Length: 222
Image (cartoon, rainbow, N blue to C red; front, side, top):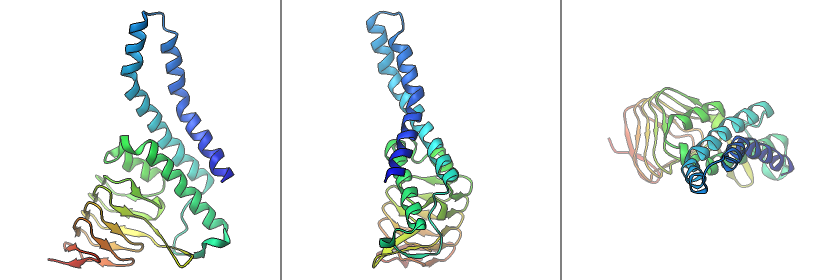
């Protein structure tokens, strides 16, 4: 907890620094009060985007330098608080902070895909992620043209009976994950697979290339 608090204090403070400096310049500008008020009002969105983008970069670089990642292919008791478990928890916390402060601005844009790559994900070209519920970025591997629908949940971990279990999720080129889907650990899809909205793909399921799936759990519909 101490390491997370210290890191997020540094990351958020550093990301806010240029915003504070620009605000100070605006407040000290020798202009009529109404003009300064107007400047501050219209500067809100650009300054927020500046802060959010800086947070994307700083957070991804920090976790890379610190080596905070989700370990692949493990079964670890959470109660033991081993270093791999702690690094996993700290990695997820940094992702959560970014998605809270920067996610609303950049989701479903190339900036969000770029952040996920910088944070450890393996993404092909033209990958569109319209969801903030993707975790364990270093265990996500998406081919070209993958589309993740709004509020879909994809992660490389699950907790079962006190054990942290992890596995890589691989989605082939052109895979489409519908709105509100849940994708389990270890799932693999062939190129062009389609998963309908509000579906659940169980852990370690294999989706055939070009096939369409729907349901809880999913079944092939054509």
